[in-house]
Image 1 (spheres, rainbow, N blue to C red):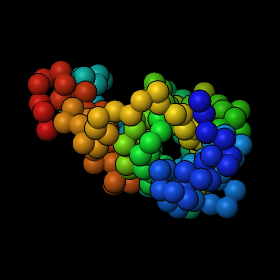
Image 2: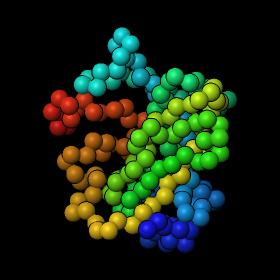
Image 3: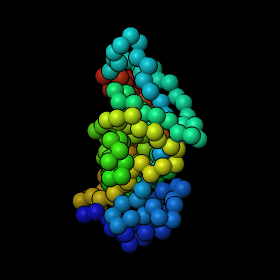
Image 4: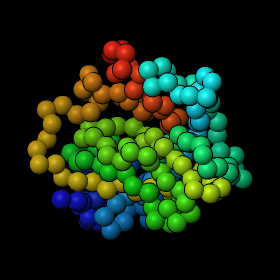
Length: 185
């Protein structure tokens, strides 16, 4: 079951969903809009290959006020301007149709969030053609689903959770190497 407009307002008022900042028209029929933060990063692999078993080198930078041109063939890690908390629902991130019509994909495979996640969402952005983007522009939408049952512990309390430090608004690069090499922290 998906939350609709009044359900979203109720969950926000009760603190079951937290979205900060939230703009006046962000709550829609069945989702809450999120916006592009000024923080971006790109991978700078050693050589020409990213090795999944090694930490990834990334270069962080910020979108200037006059925008940033994203180019095809690159993966841009970005983050939402909004800090979110989801205490009783399963959040799902999708792109906005207006953004998709520009040829922008906001995530590669990581659209599902977890009950108990608290932080900024990292976006894995790719484009089909050169597109100029701006900090603060609408980039995606979060829908919220009711789980059949609640997990015993939320995402932030699970020892196996990978991105529990998402309070920082900078995008988080992949940490798959930790699982592949047995690193637990």
